[in-house]
Image (cartoon, rainbow, N blue to C red; front, side):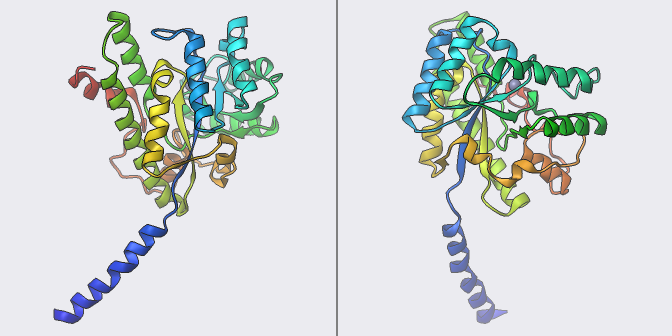
Length: 307
Ligand SMILES: [Zn+2]
């Protein structure tokens, strides 16, 4: 080989750097699920609500909140949600009772009724938008369920509020909440650090998977939950993404990405839309775990760290 071979090798280096430099800054939006405010600890529900809304305003981000209908039946729930509406955030449908469509007992008709029941509670908010997010990101374990609900949603004018960056923020919150119930003065910083590291790991994974699946810079929808963890650390989370060069965009802008209209024909259906498309295209590693994200994956590590 000798010098000629080396020369050819060196010549390819600058072009690789150029490619890396040309790669645009990843864009991400905040999509927040459940609106389960009744489990207030450390912050009251109103304080948690205010903290999250203040953070979004400080970063000039319009999020989309996917609401479980039963959380906004009483006056307090309605008031808390009105603050989102007035702040200009979009409101989406996350069913009335948060059923798992992949459960063997779940049936299409009951699930459809659950969607409509939530719509009744949400439709009069001016910022309600017909976006639907599947609870637990489970879209059906049979073709009958998967296609039945997809057709139902389309015929009712719904678009899918898919997640691109899935994660287990809810598990970190669950363990933080349990710790604070035991000891209200417990140090919350280790939970913050774990959370940020976990979210960055998941974002990096799904962003690189998205490049492999789509070949273009997808507009990300980051999944987070309305919980204490985000009441305390959503600002740190957004600041971290910005510090890594990621650019925040509004959720409705993110949903304009064509990826959200795709309907991967995989079973069980669901998870991150990126993961699902990767599975359909056969580019997931044979060892890829299912569910793609689950508390079990994090619980052992957190336990080890004393969290
Ligand atoms: Zn949910």
